[in-house]
Image (cartoon, rainbow, N blue to C red; front, side, top):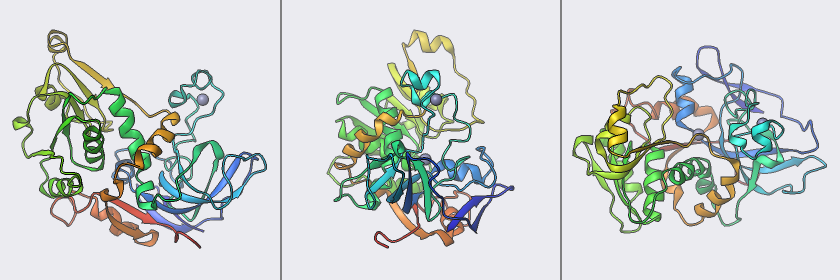
Length: 340
Ligand SMILES: [Zn+2]
Ligand SMILES: [Zn+2]
């Protein structure tokens, strides 16, 4: 099969790999239809996020069950599924407590980083990490369910309610999804990004139900908000400037280089809460799938590329590449046709 593999120099290379086989009775082989490119994938390629050389990248996937082990009863051959890429062992202490997202045996199980992922024709997983999607749901909507699960996790951590004024820093896919979800919760939403192309894309994507989202070019002009999401991961100081007294700041974006200068006294005197939600627990997946039935997630997708054209796809996601600013929102790599 075809596979996009992480090379030693933070690159991606199209190679041929043997089609994965079932090695345990609880596993399934999934024929991948398509996968979204995540910010993390891009971070790996620019050396900002660790990944193991030789691993097949990709973790936001929709596919079809192609083969199944003898113990699998939750899905059947031909079923359309999305994958939950946050694998866990099920045996360690946190796992026994149901805190799968804090599994201590994550090494070798991070899909697309050190466990072969979905930028390929096929992948293999234990069946508890695949979830059925409704027949009526398009693959373009389904491919956004994994990032939606992540956003839902953060929204719940921020305890967003209809009465909240929410400010979101960063109008990339996570920022736009956060805006969609906060609006669905009834909150008033403001979105900030200093990149013009991203603002225009975000405005277009969010223009579907006559609910306005205020867009801001300068974070300094943003209205005070009782919940602030930093989807960039470097903007805690900015968030401290925007958040209202007794407000909540949710750190969403991953950046292992970011540090911040904050005054602890301000946190206590102003009664602020700073929240980190971490990885989602896999239990959130069925809820994300239900939610996806009511949200036009496919609007986020601006481009599809076949696996072979991966370098064009990643070029589009580079703010400093040949384009002036970001030329895309969600970019999807297509592995196979819906029906073979
Ligand atoms: Zn992702
Ligand atoms: Zn575990």
